[in-house]
Amino acid sequence: ATPMSIMTATGRGAQAGVLIKNAEALERFAKVDTLIVDKTGTLTEGKPKLVAVIANEGHTEDEILRLAASLERGSEHPLAEAIVDGAEARGLELSKTEAFEAITGKGVIGRVDGHAVSLGNARLLDELSLSAEKLGELADERRENGETVMFIVINAVVVGLVCVADPVKETTPQALKALHKLGFKIVMATGDNAKTARAVAARLGIDEIRADVLPEDKARIIQDYQKQGRRVAMAGDGVNDAPALAQADVGIAMGTGADVAIESAGFTLVKGDLNGIVRARRLATATMRNIK
Ligand code: ADP
Ligand code: MG
Image 1 (tube, rainbow, N blue to C red):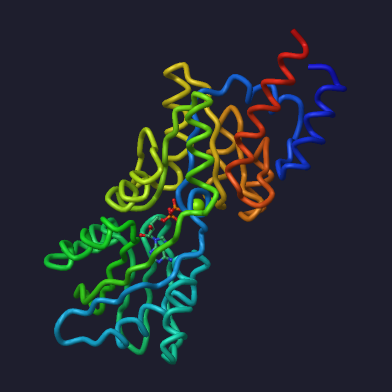
Image 2 (image 1 turned 45 degrees about the horizontal axis):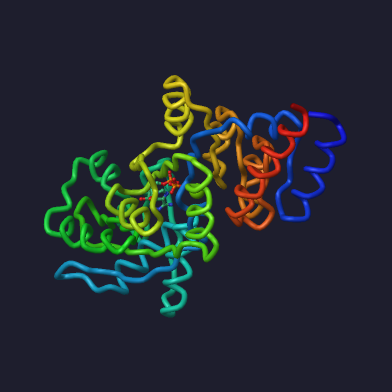
């Protein structure tokens, strides 16, 4: 493309809330046929809210939520914030955590008030050689509504569930519809549970789902599509998404997300509105047409 047409596209993009890093990103994006999107913070608002606490017999909701939230004060994950805010909204007083450890893609563990406390997903239970038993069925019911469910473990016993919901961004359904019309195959990649992912994807017309993905696997998923001859764009917001954004033919970061994601990306959607991808594609196609 000519420097002039690139400048025009860059200017128009900026007006529409899409920052275009360089001519190369624009040229590559004209050829992309597959769009991989992260769920949390990309399709959804990324500000999960605590919606339910379920305690097994012998425990109270407040007791297990208090321990969970005390533990989560050590984590910077958006899920942790939802739990801490939810506990504070109930007026619970949180305790200090000792021996805190975050296990990427699984959850958190530590000691609170002399108890060994863990909070996380089924993979975390696997790692602790614990079984969810009855709570597993309850968890599945909540996941079918698109909620993210975490198991809380106290002294090596699974004692309850903490359920969190993260609404889909208002702009997402329309943007995905337009992207489909432009011919993209749309794939959701998420560290969340498959049932939760399916519930969210079903409302959005996503073509394929890769769930229960560990952060380090996102880049490998992109490689798999590339090996099939596809040209792949990846949209993500998190610290964990940076390697995938770099692996993609074009990385698309949410301006509302982590700085490293933005650094690894060819495009940045200033307000995180996915309609910016539609706009970017039109600009890319128009720019390439001008040089032929
Ligand atoms: P995403 O792709 O949604 O950004 P992550 O890889 O960050 O996902 O996390 C995947 C899963 O790991 C979460 O859905 C949750 O079940 C669990 N998890 C991660 N961090 C925490 C935490 N601080 N507390 C509880 N669970 C967590
Ligand atoms: Mg994310």
